[in-house]
Length: 547
Image (cartoon, rainbow, N blue to C red; front, side, top):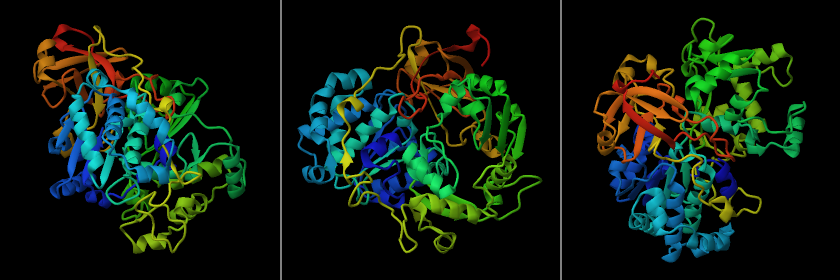
């Protein structure tokens, strides 16, 4: 969100999901789209069947990579180098859209001068591990398309150079004029349902509702709206909160950080040492088992409320059954706790009243109402400023959401490649990257309780290339131990060429984040490094303690 906001003035997906089928070329980076966003994948398939090119950047041969015309099997964390080289090629070949750049952007000259000399063919080979000619082909295909569409996910964002990488990716869209039209844009796919909605209403350490950056001016505006004093300083981002000695209590709902946080053992120690921990959830998760107080929450079918999809589509979900036992909707629990704490600004009696509060405070939602959503079950895309406004499926059609209406090419210092804080070496010669599998959802809070889904993937595993398996004495199906500078993990080996040589892949659903660093994060966005971890592997028969 940080990088997109800088470049476009908005950190949201630029186009709607149905609109993606209209692209002539897809550039998909860091996204296992088929398994994790199947509805979006279906739109890509439609476009490919209609003749669109598909370019995929991923160290693994995923299903979407198998569909691709060009699969760049980049090393994890090296996408920035590829994007900068693509920008260089686009400029060298004269494929940039001079009219769009002149009329709708700023900062082009400095960016163009930088990329012409920033990344060489040798850099592409050495850092990204791919053929520069393949990257050149990708650049030309994307730039020559009438409608080029960029899609990305956490394979790009969960790095310590995520913001730099995404700025360079956005610059490709600006160079080619691929923003503000059907089948184009820069389209992040959110990792969970309603992540977009949570950010919209202010569930961020650095932004108030409606993406007002935390500071005196925004605090004063919200204080007038709410009628009570609002803090002027940003809060702590999640990794910072788990590192802070000043945090004595936590209230956690809809999250399972005992499994999902980087270096999860570090997170568990923090949770155990809190003076007071409240967990609000549907199930007794690993985090809830550590809590002093557990508040039972209602599931999605047991409550009424809105969800905002990854493409800014706001939809109303109506309650269909009553919650069991003492379970209550999240909004009801939070209201009850707030009243007992004597906090101002609460007292809503229904989810509709909560949504009216959102409309009042979030300008992008102002024209959306429950009545309109009931008449339009397909939803309304924000921004929707007035009740007679149809919504905005495509952003930036005429101007960007910046102060002057122009997009901003990144400054050279904001896209410069930086070597990893800790790279591979003789002690840890492999790169561990983590991700998700089709059968499970995040920490398996729900899917792990489904016999059908759990039988699909019942245990942790690691993918390893056949050459690496031979090199380290690993056989397919045997139990192995993965070790990183941060932890160790026991799981089953899958020897496969679906992962590139020198890289091993494991899902994070079973607790594998015990292997990831707690202190390597993107300094601007606060996102942990989950995708590039120095590692080694050995058969468990060689000894060593368990995970």
